[in-house]
Amino acid sequence: QFSWKPAAPGTHRLFLLSDRDDVVDESDEGNNETWLDLYVGFHGPLLLDSGGEFDPPYSPELGYGYLNGESDRSCGQTPDQSFRASDSGQVQYRFDHLVPSHFYHLDVTLYHCSTLQREEFVLVDDNQIGEAVNLSDGLPHRLSFRLDPAFYADNSIVVTVQQQTPGLNAVVS
Image (cartoon, rainbow, N blue to C red; front, side):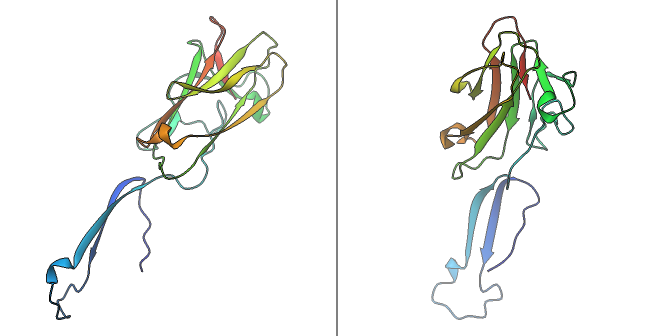
């Protein structure tokens, strides 16, 4: 048994050497070495507050963050009222270091302080998950999705919040 804490997520090779000093007399000395390649992903939840205090841009070193959109806090000071918006009709985030043998939940809050007719939906790697949500009621909409491990077989996903109505910006709270 041993304890090991990886310095960073990603692929790591664990190497085991038994009887290093050749103390044990064995008939087969060639089986004293082995290794295991394993992928270390994120442990515990990642919390991003779109447009809020903790909303980092994506970087390979961090392994997650937003890819586009402008931060805006003009709706108020509650967490639901901070948001990231994009005139392109999409706000995107990337998450790396996901382990296919684990299940992950994606929790998203959609809210807009305007009562304009506005509908948005969520995509993971260009696949729509769930129905479009109408934001014109002025209420926060909290969505939770259990992700299919097939999405992150490559250890990474891109989450897109897409505006259904052409010409309106997409918003993520």
